[in-house]
Image (cartoon, rainbow, N blue to C red; front, side, top):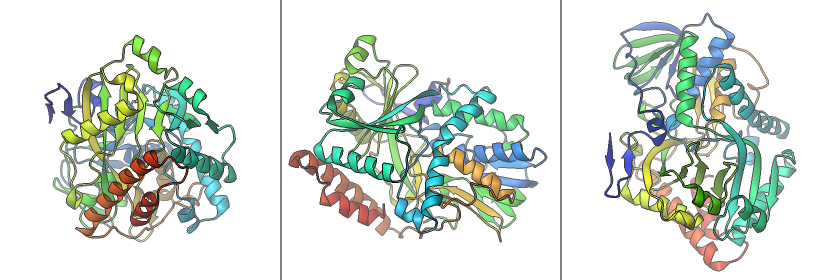
Length: 467
């Protein structure tokens, strides 16, 4: 399940977040055989659990069964970086192909509200997820990175993002917040929160079970078709079915090229002593990112550790996934390099834990939610690594669609989008690895060149990837 590296770093075991809870949970019972339900949800992560929650909230009489391959929260929901941002990776032009400008502005407005909604539910359901309202600081450490932040800020302002939501700050103010090496400025996003993801997902599990939702673990789905979910433990017959499998969608026959599972990995330091915090700052427990093409993400945890994440090896041939979060030694070394590059004060800190997981990426890099009215099969995902708050929005939207209700959510431009499938192997592997190689080279070139223009290499990578 996990191993210790020569340096004493725990590798795998799902994630540090479960160690913080005392270990991974005991399994619930598997599907006992053939059953019937009003709604069958495949996948017990954030998307599946939020969908079940809002369905039962609206219609307590519904019978809802959730089928999970391992245990609830096994995937990205229990392994992510703990960013609850009320946003995700935007490509507005692509969403405009299926919606209007007004619809897209409304979509962003509703997404921003997901942070308040998640906080509201955790308070109502007495879920302690270490939620801390804070700000997201995206640092620029070169002139080209700072120009990208300016461009992003101006675009967001042109699209009507509230002015009190975003602020560009210069090097002095940025370094006064967090002492990031070579910082030339930062983009501040307000209205976000830090969470402990495993605590949130375990709390949701208990909440939906109190509402009468049945969760069957250790049950592998082998086929999804109209009115029927086939598993290795039996068959579930249901008029409505939800595919909420995100980065594991490729494992269901017929969905091998729907979304690719890209890898992301995280390292967590030992607790940081107060003397070191005095050098670093980070007093507001802000979320921390950077404007490099090879993006990183970090948080200061409740226990005063630093959790730093990034891509590592981005993709395994044939869409293969990890074994219980175990990652490569080279990935751990890369993440340590990123941590020490941004915060050289941390070089003496020991890395206590490292792990990885997969996230679902559609071919156009745009999240989607929908329902096929003919088959009764619904889906949501493709969050491209920013799914903590987006999954809440997806759960509410799916509940509306499944109940046949027309709401302000069901008319949004991500509903019923169908991007084309990914290329077959080996083209998929070659394309994805070429993309990330180009991004790394672009970051290196921009750091050396010193200009304000984004590298042509990154633009080529964007074209290859469809981002």
